[in-house]
Image (tube, rainbow, N blue to C red):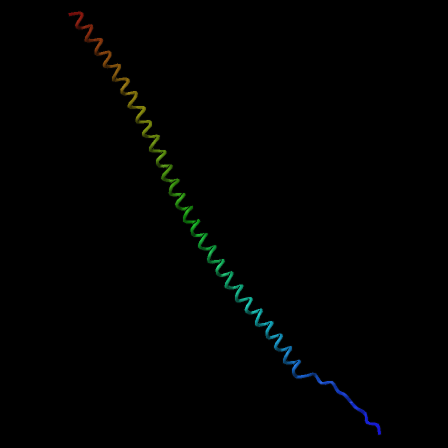
Length: 111
C-alpha cells in the first residue's frame, strides 16, 4: 500500500510576528531618529537666534558709537573754528597794541 504524503506549507506564525517586529523596530528607530533630529534642529535654531540677537545688539551699539563719533567730529570742527577765530582776534589785538604803542611813541616825541 502506497500512501501519499501531502505536504502543505503553511506560513509560520513566527515569521509573521518576526516581520511585524522588524517593521515595528524600523518604525520605532525612524521615530527616534526624527525626535533626535527635531531636538538637534531646535538647539541649532536656539543657538542661531541667540547669535543673531547678539550680533544685532552689537550692530545697534556700533550705530550708537557712530552717532557719538559723528557728533564729536562736529564738535571738534566747531572748536577748531573757535580756535581759529581766537587766533585771528589775538593777532588783531597784537596789531592794535603795536599801533597804540607807536602812537604813544609819536605823541611822546611830539611833546
